[in-house]
Image (cartoon, rainbow, N blue to C red; front, top):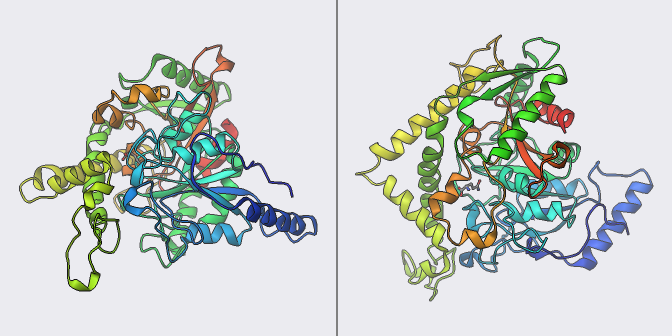
Length: 471
Ligand code: GLN
């Protein structure tokens, strides 16, 4: 059987669990037969797809790369995996990640750090680092990740792959283990925009099992809003001045400029725009995400979920088990503490409420610059002078060496998310595409820089189509 664009080799510590190789070969041969006899189930029939290990699968454990869920077998399948299987895709394994999705370099994992596989010295980005390097090293054709504050895009940028975070609510979160519900978004990594589009076509859609999944009615509204884009022969691409932060590596800045010059020479317009709340977005994210996490992770108390040193009996009316904390990593504990603090009575007004307000300003900033309105927000109106998309770098710097991460403070790591979190706070569709640096005569590792295209809420197809043109 031909394994469609995936090989069964194991590298980079990309996977925490593999599907049995015999099963994969048998499934591939059945899919081959379907395809050659005109019974192909879908364009992704027979493709090898890897799943981030915070997404529930039947037949394979789901651990979130946490000792607290070691060996956990979900009794049900996530909607996204169910849809992939129904379309003929072969789930080839579960990919490594930062524990519960908390991290930017896929090093906070109970299964060990993920590496680039080129000698193992560079970070793959996080938290969907296993999903990204599995795609980059052709261990699968495409993979599913989750993006709460950049976890698909940063790994895509670091590994030279395409990473797409759809609008919040496009792909069902049913069966995705929550980190920060209001931000968690299921998305896709692959080696081309076209492949992402094929997986998106299968996985999008309303799901009654996810209360935040967009209804068909809203989806129709979003499609018509997207069609009402100001009629212009060319694209109007916005460059947010506030994204030109001091932390951006000068080479990445040059590549950003060169990409904008190419956009102009292709006959499009580039305009500079302002998103004034951008500066506050990072700290806002790191108040809101841990707050939600502290609530979501309370269930790993060692009673029903989460291994504990000694397992108490559920029936005995115990509230929590002793020793439960031993199975959570330092970063996860830090977030739980941070979240418990910002939600506490004395800190709530100053932190959590303020952060919610800033989040709203971030959303309003985006609404003010896009040409089409945000259908979900009544105050948002069409702006004939507005832009179609925003183009920015994905990461401020090149992938750091894994060894150097040992000396990073948590704050320094959080800083790597500065360009990805604003679109997360606003729930916007965004894709990171690789730009080869060698074409610019720049000699920089790892030979590629990720650029982000950000669209108005619900304008996912436009983001993807344009990314395909710029690729
Ligand atoms: N690095 C960010 C965090 O640790 C983003 C993670 C994510 O998107 N899951 O919260």
